[in-house]
View 1: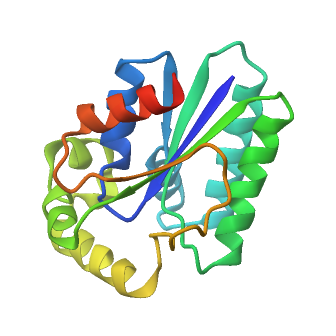
View 2: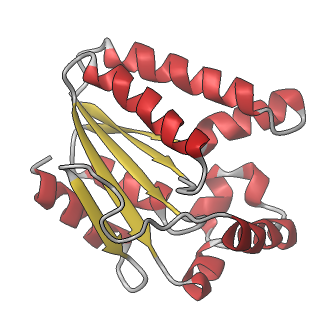
Length: 183
């Protein structure tokens, strides 16, 4: 089994790259907003404990299957120990079944991310982003408040790839990931 952790800042293109990667591999996509949107709909607000518990159930049950693997997309605030702990919990689940784990960090300019924040694919898959004014305000707030780009040599992982996808199409990025890790 394989687990591709695809992370980066808001609107960097994680979900779209994940969709493209799944088209050219046997990986399945689990993007972070699959649980966020569900919890927002049910609770009427962001409820982090429910989101984390739902994700944990998906990871645990998926790791028991015969599936080739999963792409999971998320924002990682490198200044928050809680985010490091969440990544550790996810990887521990898959390491128990001897999964190969790959870490892919996407980076793009703020200007490009502001444009990507409005794309049809993003709005179709993430209901909470459809209020563009609010979504853009959250993106800018997250940009100021969170460090979602790692420092050079900060990540100690053997299977790690960082891609500046500012000027790259999602299918090109997906192909780069597939080739780098022989997926």
